[in-house]
Image 1 (cartoon, rainbow, N blue to C red):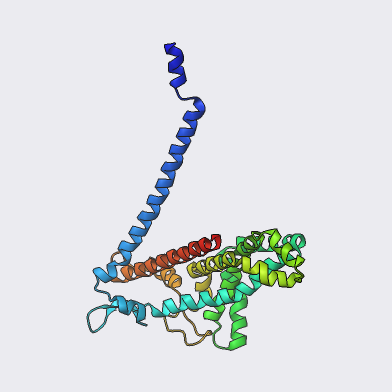
Image 2 (tube, rainbow, N blue to C red):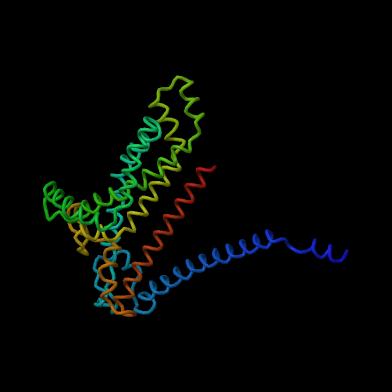
Length: 305
């Protein structure tokens, strides 16, 4: 009896494997969380050094237009005005999203509502192809096609916010389109059937029922597209002109936070004021990415309600 009771109290092989699987999963998840926290703490520590160690001014950082961290102003503070880069990043991002959203909505409606099977057969491979093209290829296309086009259209050198927005428009189009397609597919079929049964036309059903029901998902797609555009570096750097000046027009050369980071991070000495100032730009990018994620989660939660 004792041996039988002992065997019954022992865990089976399947139970032991399941327990080990849960333990491994929890450990790996905890490792990922710790890794994210370490990365955030590392960038935050580096990013605030220019303010705590080098006496940089936070107000000047967000409102100043002179970026020359290795020089000092009359108050013996480094010149770290990042406003031209902030304006450049937001201008390129917002313009690209404004251009991409109508095309993405049209493509998603065509794929899900007007010609569901043929639409997906035609557009899905095109979208997947656009996703797979490396950023540097988009940059080369921008140099060879977009910049001369902008030069002929509005004059100037062709390098600037408009050229960067056109390149980003193509890059974020697949992201917004794919997520909008998923949002429209998630709208229950009986919404459409009820609308058509009440006498609405197909377009009225799409416009007044499907798009409204899918609004949270569409907004999430747009915010994801903004996040993708805001963090893009190489392709934008190749066509925007990289001039740390307040942009006076869409055709004037400008720069973005990511462009300045990619061009200068390897050319500065660690722990110097110039290097610390670049880390402050990296921290700003990280905070913006976190902000975009919070907005996406908020919209998704509102959609569930």
